[in-house]
Amino acid sequence: MYPNPQDALPLPPRPDLDQYRTRAKELVAACRQGDPAMQRWVTRWIADLVRLQPDGSRLSPADVERPGQQLIHFVRERLRPNDATIAQAQFVIARAHGFDSWPKLGQYVEALRSSDSSVATFERAADAIVAGDLATLELLLRAEPALVGARSSREHRSTLLHYASANGVESYRQRTPANIVAITERLLDAGAAIDAEADVYGGGATTLALVVTSSHPRAAGVQNALADLLLARGARLDAGIVRYCLMNGCPEAAAHLAGRGARVTATDAAGLGRLDLLRQAFEPPKSVSAADRGEMMAMAAWYGQRDAIRLLLKLGVDPALRRPEGGQTALHVAAYQGDAKLVELLIQHGAPLDLPDAQFGTPPLVWALHAWLKEDRPSAAPYIRILTALVAAGATVKPEWIADERLRAEPTLFAALLAAVRR
Image (cartoon, rainbow, N blue to C red; front, side):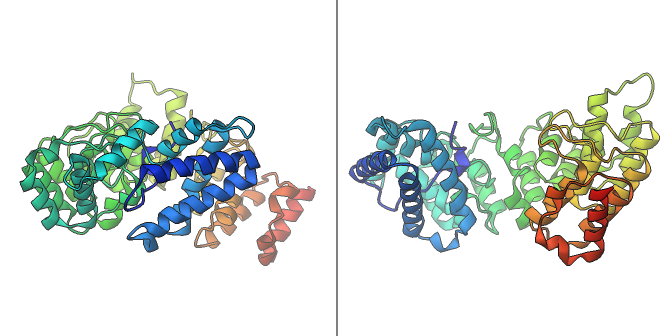
């Protein structure tokens, strides 16, 4: 359901239910005036919410743009210009703040009116965790020992321990302070349930699973230390946890957990560059399906595991095989990732140059162009090399693919692309 729990908007410092009723009426009026008026209302409302936050200056334009676009889309789904109702607008506003319904938002706002309510205390504790304020957290836990087992009023139903992961909870609270390991240890000492599950990403998310798939503790350099603490306190290792790490851009955590005894599949081994496990997967009488082979190739390509790709090719894996989900070949992935050496290796082994993926219907050359020109990768050099290699090998080029003026700044490459269009 919209929005994802982590995309929930923050409330103003002193929320008032009457003000929210007024906002619902404003939204209905804006919808009845047409789509442009509705978009202006959404943009203004979110800007006001950000401005009122104590740390609003920390938010980037992207932090505001994404929830704004999601909310605009949701309003279009729920409120039709000719028959928009107050009840529909109230539901949209409640969902935008991460609550299942308008009554639940109302109960939450009313509970915040009392500074010593369990809801208000939980919110202060969550703020203390993400701010690294161990002293305040300590005071709150001593005053109310049951707080450590309380859950958020929002739909994700996270405990305080989940907030230590900086994952799944509301995005404005996804932060990893320098002392997060000490904070997590204090929560565990207070009796936090190590394997309590939050209702995010389909449900059943433990703190360990959230920690090892979160970009924030990874960027802070404490991801593995947090994982070790949780494991030492008895956290369970879910069967697919290594894959979760790899699918969420956390290869260091994947390797770390593999070393701690987590299950590693053959596809995981490809992403980790574990050649020993890859060889074992192909030992007779074992049989590896075409779908699994395609997944292995793509995973190895995503993480630049060229030795794993070489081994898979040696074992007879066809470079034309695709990932079951999305239909990309290893060449698509390598081209997108800017791995010129791997692109050249795959071309040498006969990888199909013009095979479209199943998701976007485009060949590897377009994936390279998109990564370079649309996602503003920091270095153009690897993509120039990749495009040159693909064109030299005979890849098809269509005029509409090379309309970007930035390509003209690379005359040698642009000439090759033009020549490919004409051949």
